[in-house]
Image (cartoon, rainbow over the protein chains, first blue to last red):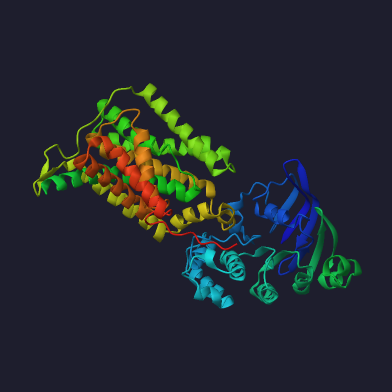
Amino acid sequence: MLTVEGLRSRYGRIEVLHGIDLHVDSGEIVTVVGANGAGKTTLLRCLSGVQPVSAGQITFRGEPLAGVPAHRRPARGLTQSPEGRQIFTNLTVEENLRLGAFLYSDDRVEKDMQDAFQMFPILREKRNLAAGGLSGGQQQMLAMARALMGRPSCLLLDEPSMGLAPIIVQQIFDVVSGLKALGVTVLLVEQNAFGALKIADRGYVMETGQITMQGPAEELIADPRIREAYLGI
Amino acid sequence: MSELLQFLFSGLTVGAVYALVALGFTIIYNASDVVNFAQGEFVMLGGMITWFAHAAGLPLPLAALIAIVATAALGVAINKLAIEPARGAPVVSLIIITIGASVFLQGAAQLVFDKQIHSFPAFSGDTPLRIGGATIQPQSLWVIGGALLVFVGLWLFFTRTLLGRAVLATSNNRLAAQLVGINTNFVMTLSFALSAGIGALAGVLATPITLTAYNVGIGFALKGFAGAMLGGMGNPKGALAGGFLIGLIEALTAGYLSSTYKEAAAFVVILLVLFFMPQGLFGRKSTERV
């Protein structure tokens, strides 16, 4: 579904992605784990078109994404729940969700919103409040729900566990693994390697802008190098 | 009593113009957090282009329409040529760019038109209407009605339409707006066009009363800005109320004290309001958790 070949990207003169190759097949949950600063967020920014690509190719559902501006990518089925949530703080929870489906104005919008409330009941309770007043965990739920309102076939999820209490992290990861049943393919970027690998089918390990290991998630969890470097075991 | 009524009429008239300018500020501010100081020049252009086209022999309604469309196009050009290339610059730099654009437009108007003071006929004649012992020009009703109509239109746009919310979303978080599929460049183009068009409309409506010249823009910009700040920047309701308040304060000061103090009085009131209510009269407190 999503193929990345030799992807390079830079901030000014400093190259941060040195040729990334990865692929995500339809229906998979794939995770990219790695330390802070490895370039994981830059990778997702390239995929969403908000970060310039200096070399390499991104192909989504058989078509190259080069030259497709960021705001046209959600219509192709590629949406992102970005790092740091990036919700619309001045707007209400409901307005945030409605804007998630900005491209659509059919009956399914209302149905999707009810589904989102089903998934995260706390959002229904707070639907008329300004999103900026939500707690960190609630904001993360809103960011994910907003991305799902865009009817993705592939959801890019950047650090959904960041800064959250363990019990909320578990809840978020449960929702992510449930997306499979809804037919949504997921590319999950995480520092929380253990949590991410537990729900993923396959994983990539990223270090300083390169993929250094890859394989089925259970193999990566069992790998002694990963256990030492990322899992703290 | 009729004296007070007379002052109120004149305050409402000029206040309506300020309100239109303040509404123009509101749109661009809502889309980009930028305070567009070229807003006053749009008012000037609305008046000057209408005068020019009318003097060239076109009927007044057509001349006014041309002025509004041409000014909206100029607003879009300013965005494309001056604001968009500076994308990513701090808001303060963008505001300074708008001041540059304002100086440029004023200079260009001086060259393209002239340095004289101009006017054109009022829309519904010059026979004053007598109300309760005071008189009001029919053109005043056009100005006040125009401000109210534009306000209602904008209020519906921002609160009832998805595109209006997309404008708010773009200013709140441009990255997230792109990620949900909003074309943020189009949102900016749209807001400059709307804002410039509304400014020009203010010029068209007000010129038969206030007259126009190449250099009237800056005064409108300052008063309109004051109105927007007084009401709470970014809030159409605040812009409307703020603009009318500034006009009323000016007119009452000029009437009961001296017209020498009318400019000062408006700004003293703004200082007081901002000192005790920094968000303005209608501004909402921004609550944000990080």
